[in-house]
Amino acid sequence: MTLTIYNKISILQLAFFVPSLVVAVTLSYRHGFRRSAGWIYLVILSLMRIIGASLELATISSPDNYNLVVGAQTLQNIGLSPLVLVLLGLVTRSYLAVPESSRPAIPNARILRQLQLLVVVGLILSIVGGTDMGNQVGDGIADGTAISYNIPSTSKAGIAIMIVGYALLVLSSLVLVTCLGAIPHGEKRLLMAVFAALPFVFVRLLYSVLSAFDSSNPNFRLYGGSSNAGYYVLGMCTVMEIVAVIIFEVVGLTLPYVPHNERGSLLNPTRRTANLDINGQPLTEYPASNSQEYPKLQQGESA
Image (cartoon, rainbow, N blue to C red; front, side):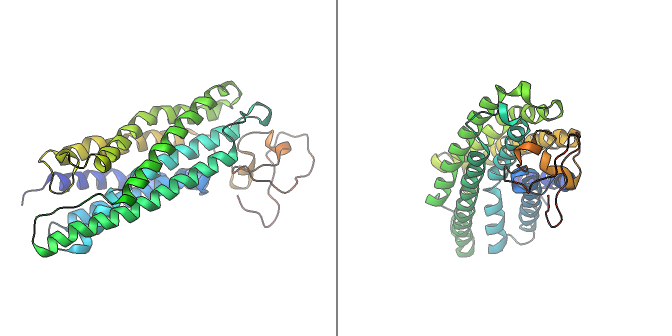
């Protein structure tokens, strides 16, 4: 049995993302499962790649299975959004680590949350578009005709939102560099991780842009494209995702641990007076104290 380039990519994804999932779950437990923390999206990305790779490999024994093709196609198209959301989570934590008196007016916690929401909308559109594209490919397989598909408008809209989200993410990161001196030492590595990962996420974004808006180029068509199309997926998608995830997880493992019931302070003692949690939301008032301990959550609250 001869494996295709897509089968080999799937094997590589399983080999990497299975252990990556274990690390991602550990990071989410250590640093918080909140969406704004960003780590939960590493879990989501790992699950997407494990399931997508499994579906792709299942087509070896069931090449005419319509559902396998649709599932694998959909999951392949939505890997960019979790990467951007992880970056936004790291930028948000970096922003909240800056003492309130030193924070820039823009971006602020509300803008960063709205930017996350925008990217989630792009993710939803990409899922809808990927499903539509998978249906087109599946219909060709079912009919025994040449596989052909058009890029759905929802996919293009989702990628357009990703472009906007990535651009705003870069601008927000550059603004936060001006506050680097005010960020606690242990948290500075977050911003470093963002800038280290941005080029790799950009290449992943570039592939999505070319696939959506230059569909006539056979090198960027998963089905019915050139014989080199799979190598573009390997180099511009799979490898870029793996490198970005390695950066995120290595930095996440070196971050200082904040106990579960003390995460509201986010390693920043000034959070006691700011009365904001990790999401920038008001906390219940804490008893006045001159100690340097992190504020404790009141009964019934959760971090």
